[in-house]
Image (cartoon, rainbow, N blue to C red; front, side, top):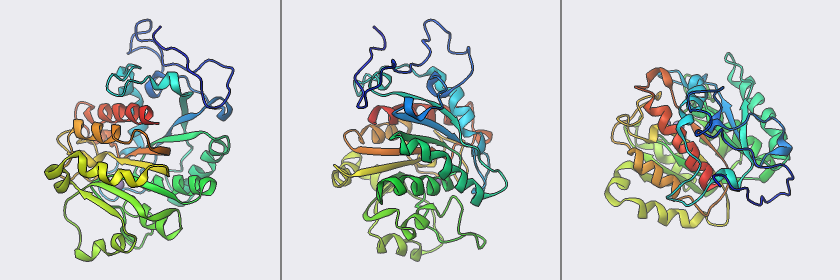
Length: 320
Ligand code: MN
Ligand code: MN
């Protein structure tokens, strides 16, 4: 049997939602949803919701992630259900479906934040874990607000070329460069339980790291990762065992040679296989939600960034 049903944590009577079978319905047919899953909007039917958040009003350089969810849906048509590396079929283990997009306001970052928080609340109330596809990285702040309201302050694992701990941009406190500084200030994150992997590139000055140091942020720069490899990250991950962890994956953690479709590209980043292995290394953690952000299809080449993002979305599901 290709997709054997499995017992879920909650006692659902309905069979698990399944991706369209590519051996019956060719991959290029049908209405695109994440991973060819059904579109389900009833929180009571789900354990995990895949949610599009098509907002890029927080970008500071190249715009375009508002088109991210649509392109990740398209490229995810190629994903098959069984993961031979992790030995898991996530659709057999979890009730997961495409919840659709949250209703963002392209003209207002504040209103969009309210809409994201409000849109997630019924899901979180029902105990559904949310996997959001952005959108730019500003969306992680309202997501963390919603998650922390339910769960309290969380640990954070962030894959990113940038720390996103800046204070403001052109006088605005909200942008894709500031979400985690705001999250610390709002008490949504736990000191010494934030890990950032893939950091690199120039900053404005040495004091750009003062805020991170004050909050004991763990950092594995791209340079350190290239020198020491996966074990250096795994050592940090041990500190996250048994704790509720939120995972945020900015696609610009990956080198622009592999993921050119993004807003603030930085050279010297991770390869496709390195980011896949980093996500797989999260297996065993208590992941209470995640997001995948900064895919900007207008700057992509041959849809390779959206394709990588679709694969990372699948791998995230596998470690849930
Ligand atoms: Mn970011
Ligand atoms: Mn970034």
